[in-house]
Every structure is written in C-alpha cells, then in structure tokens.
Image (cartoon, rainbow, N blue to C red; front, side, top):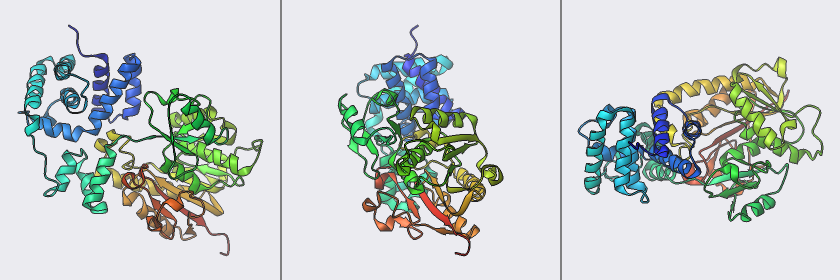
Length: 467
C-alpha cells in the first residue's frame, strides 16, 4: 500500500500540531522537513501546502461545510486537515491533477483514521462536482461574513478591523494578508554596502528592488531557502521587514551611550542597533565594553541572538543576558541612554507572513498581552537614564497594544514626554504627517497602506533634572 506522499504527510503533521498544540508553523515545518528527510522539491511542496491551507482555512472550510453532512468542527483535526489539503490543491494548485489530490487526501486520512477514508473521499468528490455552485456571503450585505469566509480571517479580527479601518480598509487589509509578501533583506552596512549585496543577487539572476522606507533595505522575490542567497553565510545581510527596520532608526543609536534591548530574541532588532551604532560611531575598533546589551526571558532565544550576532560579525558589540524584562535591575546593569521595548504582542500585523497566528489568537489574548506589555514598560523605564530615550514597539495593529499603551505610559510616568521621530526616520518624506500621532512620537504602519508588516513605534524621552 503506497500511502500519501512524504511532502503531504509532513504537511499534515505540521497542520495538526499548529491546530492542536498551538505550534508555531515555521518551527513545526522546519522540524517536519528534517524528520521526514524531504528532498528540495518536497520541501517546497510541504511549505506551500502548510502556508496555503493556513492562509485559506476559512475559505476551505466554508466550501467543505457545504458538502459535509457532519460539521467540519466535529471532525478530528487529522481528518479536517486531510480534507483541507485536498480542497486546497483543487482550488489553488492547478499543477496537481484533481484525481491525485483526492487520492492523496484519502491516503492521508488512512494514516490515523482508516474508517474516515470513505467519508473524506465522498465529501471531496461532492466538492469537486459542486464547488462552482457555492455562494459566499455578499460583501454588500454582510461584509463581516464575507471577510470571514472568502478572505479567510477569524470573525473577531474582522469586526475589529471593520471598526478601525472601515469596510474598504478592512477588505484591503485582509486581501493584503492573503497575498505573498516580499522577502526583505537588511544589508549589514557594518560589513558591506547595499550596492555590493545588490550586485551579488543580480549575479545569480535575482533582481532586487530598493527599500521603500529605509535606506539599507532590498526587497526580493526568491524561491528556495533564504540561506542559499549569496552573502547570507558571510553575514552580509539579515532578513528583516522594513517596518521592523524602522524601529532601529527610531532608537537612533548615536555611537555614544549604551543601549538596552529588553525583549531582544531572536535578535533582528538587536543586530540592527549594532550595525547602526557601528556606522554612526565612526569607530574602527569596538569599545572595551559592548555598547548593546540584549535581554530575553528564554535561553533558546538568547542563543538565537548570539548566533545571529556571530554570523553578522557583530558579536563584539553585543552582550546577551537571560532575564525577565519586568525585573531587570538598574543596580546590576546600570542605566542606558536608549532602551528598546519590542514587546510580545498578538502579532496581528504579521499575518501575511504568519497565517497560523490568525487562528491561534483570541480577543482574550489582547487584554492579557496589554497587561504584560505594561508590566514590561514599568520595568524598562527604570533603565532609562536622565535625558535618555525609550522606544516601544509591537507588530500588532490593535490600538490597546499600541497607542493606548503609549498614552498610558505618558500618564503613568510624567517624567517622560513624547519625542518626535521626524529627524530620525528616513522614511518620513514618504509618510504623510497625519500617519503620526502624539506630536510625531507614535507611528502605526499597516500592510495594506505601507507594504510592510503592521508595526507600531512610540518614542519618549526622560526629562533631565530641572527640565
């Protein structure tokens, strides 16, 4: 008995883990690729299936529910995902013949629930015959139901975004989340130049475009592993969205005082701070004490910071500590001229890259994370020296996590005042003034407006004595 293909079997295991264990899709996928020993073509197929099914789960389930006598939610996660994989191939994967797609899903069902194979086969055959007759909610009559099903986003998020962005804005945001995102490279200007990295990519047939918002960014559309791009192993660039890169520019390392990144793992923003510090300091040799101090709660995340810093050749500029950002003592580590709080958040601004998150978060998570974010801000403000700067950022679109936290912080700590980012964000000329709030001290980026991840950035300065 042949069973399902290895790529589909690996994808089904990932989808089950994401759904039942809350696993992060990228980590679960990497593990599955290794454990199933997939060849490059199978890796690509497994990746396409995992992200495709997660991205379009709402639409797939709506289709399947029209042909299933049992509620899709009442089926086991394994059987649900076997059916979703088959429907995904039919709707989005023209290169897979329909008989093959159906047969593979039936074989997948047999792996864990042989008795369900006949049911999977019957539902998928009915779906193939009748899919053209399925009618989705009319966006002019029920925009929330349309975005929940056709655009495949959870209802609670859809309703939030309709209130925040209006019908057209929410529709555009959901559509953007479902479109492929560019890979953005942050050129390591401590080692090389944008022009040299661009030339290296051109030499292998990849034509990058310049960043839209930051000067050290290149955008590429490349198939295969990012690690295979020329210059990656040599540390000539890091993968980082332009919205995240703007956070480093907002911190604005000036090559003088020390900088703390208190929620630093896995290290993208930390290493960017080190690059900017290197360029702005004008030093040819690193100082005796590393100017960037990175903290994270988890050892595995601090290990990632250390690894990234070594690859980029920035390890002599960064010290790494495992610590809870809510309890970092200035008596132990001193105070800093700049403190970055890139806080844990719902991640609703990165759903185009992380479609798994849209199904793993709930309204209750927003309130819980706001509490955590405020505890971290309360701990971090103690580390800011007089006249020093605090930058708070999230990759969320939710106002409670963003502008409302900024206002709370200013009310809770009156010794801080908003500090405009106009002089330090190189993108300012490309962003309308009305995109900023709090006198230029707060900025919300959104995927459908800026072509970046949805980042929020807020900056405040601690008054010096007597000011």
